[in-house]
Length: 436
Image (cartoon, rainbow, N blue to C red; front, side, top):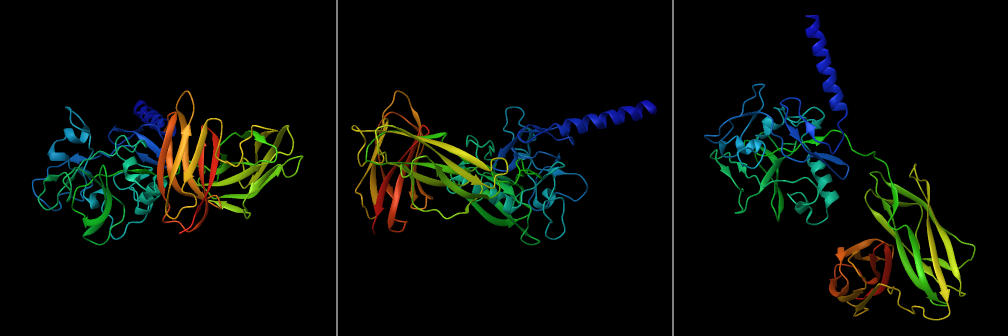
């Protein structure tokens, strides 16, 4: 008896130690049945990277409610073939399909969040608000494309179809002809209906339907992977204006980014320089400046040399980031008598950009050229006078060459804007005016 007791204690301690070593992004072992699930961090949420597959398989010979509140977790498998639940014998690993009441483990009335349901200890069925947090982080457009296999987030939703409550059969989609997948959230509408999320390769929708359909379940970790606090970051390590003619001006920009998950308060942004008027801010900013989580703010700095010599200064940024209360950004430039870039704020050694027409009423054509020996990392976007991004033009890799792209700003108000480009950590800007 003593040996058995010691063995039990040792096994329990080993299990607790193994669980305590788990961290978000690691594979998770479900101690209830030994199945492993990959996990993935998206924003400040940790999701299972595959559908839950807990429970005893039951057949679906007819429609309606077939699962019972009997203390045993039950599941459907696609086409009543358990290979489709587990991904064996060459079949896809869909995981289980669950009726809503089975998924939440038979709550009476509106569940109190979070709802563990059929998820492992420390995990829960996501609420509609938590689904929205995921979509908002990936948004604002085409966020659903990032959730499917190959979408780049690791969520890797498979197009599973669902178990139909009308006939008990398995269908690829509720209405569409292409295969889709469906997820439960933790809430219900009433005694018959609950919200459903429908995800396709090229579409996403929400609607409510009978709780007796069989859908997939994704589990969400109860905790947040990162602290709910701001984290200040700069998009470039230094502002280097290269050479500018005496009396001429060149404008460059940088971003203050909030990489954290709490609101960032920027108390001040100042230029520390021994010579006044050489580096100056373009535009006015009111402090303190609030930057929401995962957002940024653009600042523009003009360099206007008075002599043929090297200039340098430091931008000093003070914020409520407790780990980096004060951060700095070095700025440098060289004034010279000739060979400067005159009047073209978008020109550089390896990148040029222009817009025609300018001013414009609704649309304008951006023409830009990238010179180099290898591809570069590029982002081109439109910002307003306050430094807010209002339109994305390009984000990704750019090959050396000449390009043109028409942009439509008809949804914006008349006024001055800037077409900003960041190429391999260097920033360029082109002022434009839209007059409707």
